[in-house]
Length: 330
Ligand code: F6P
Image 1 (cartoon, rainbow, N blue to C red):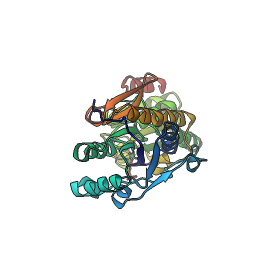
Image 2 (image 1 turned 120 degrees about the vertical axis):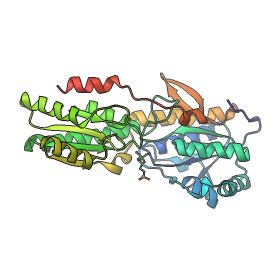
Image 3 (image 1 turned 30 degrees about the vertical axis):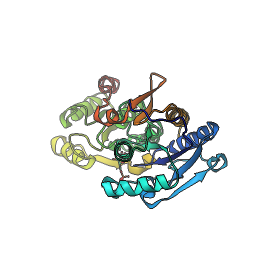
Image 4 (image 1 turned 45 degrees about the horizontal axis):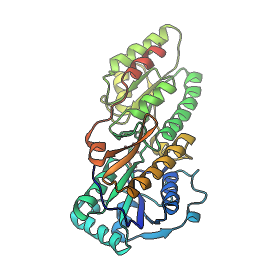
């Protein structure tokens, strides 16, 4: 694990990067307030790496973090920066950080954001600790990422509503959820929402399996069904799935793509607590001279994992939950 000399650490910066996730505000608040509690001066960088390149950096106090713990999105804004992917962009960002006297960073985001933080350490020796903030939950080194719980509950809420109309019309619905290349959201939403089947990149559910399960339901008088599909699952996007099902079985499916609604909304208590713990853990890690690591929670304990491992190692879904879902929906 990389270390730096933190004995004279005075100024830290915090930024959110990549897709926003509910709970990011609670994490920023924790970094700022724990940082000040630890006698540090804390700065926020606006809009992630693009704000770093543009020098949008400002000092904050405890009061500026008031009334944000319950808010979705990120009040310090976020983004994905193409310029930061290039060494020249990173050099500009590092120069702005140094101009403000910022000696260490807390990066709240997902794998792409952590790669950026790692590059700042490798190329400019600016130490950083990551905090996993993404609805996708696809980060190794933590049982759960900030925003995942809220996104699952938001999608679940939508499924419960879809179920009302599906039951009223005896219809089949395919609900597509986010997750980039992973099926964490889809699997949890499918299990909690009583879906007939779930399509995720990590498992091999086929269109034929889903048709069999729908027919099994019909045979016992179940007239409406819900299939949950992750955006990156193997059989294609939700409309492709609907078309394959129609061609193979004649069943007409309504498609509902939940999209960015899953990224918004007030964070759940679980996300606020996780964000508060991990924001604090990031500051405590920097105080101890840790860097190039991510703070996560595994089995309720805070752990630090090298940033590189967080995106090189693959976090897998619990496949037995797919089987459980299929048994429960019989
Ligand atoms: O990583 C979070 C996420 O919402 C993914 O689930 C999704 O694939 C992607 O971001 C969407 O990105 P954008 O908001 O840039 O369209």
